[in-house]
Image (cartoon, rainbow, N blue to C red; front, side, top):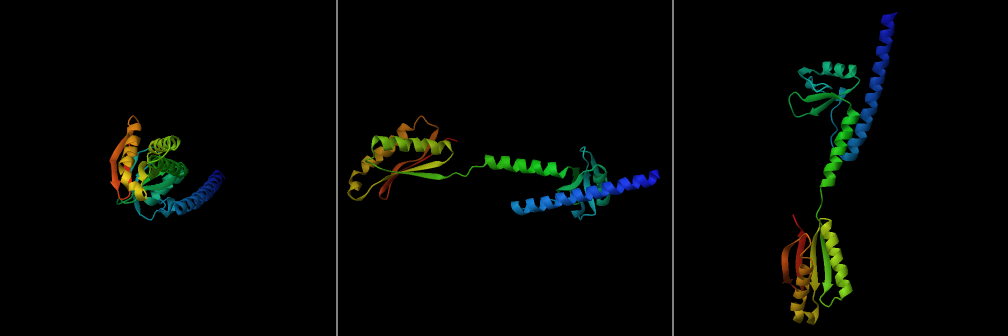
Length: 205
């Protein structure tokens, strides 16, 4: 009778483990589709006959048959996950795959936060700009720079205004002077480009 009871528990545990792995596999499949990346090999999806096994305590068991590694993972009520598929044989670790995937996603999100795509913001003005509009443009430049973006100031000249290009240059130089105490680098000094005067600003490194 005790033997029958043990077998019964073994069958129940096996069913639970299979159900759990089936749920994890489905979740992982959905995650892989949304991320557009190849999903990691886990449990019965591991086709290699042997793996370099690291158990849940971090102990390296060397090269073992995959079937043995799967039994060890099942006994620990955990998963067998390939963490280095390009090695021969691949490196597999016994772990909680749900927690493992959460940590990977967390690291990916943190790495994404650290990435910043630098935009080039354009500030277009006329050399006859009034004081209020000038202050507004100055404020916008400071905001764009603080966000890590570059700024291209364009002082536009139209028609006969080309005769007063020196005034446009003076306005561009005024922007640079008023921002001298800000964490800003002048990448390109004021210069005439076609019918405009431009100056390029960037955040200090």
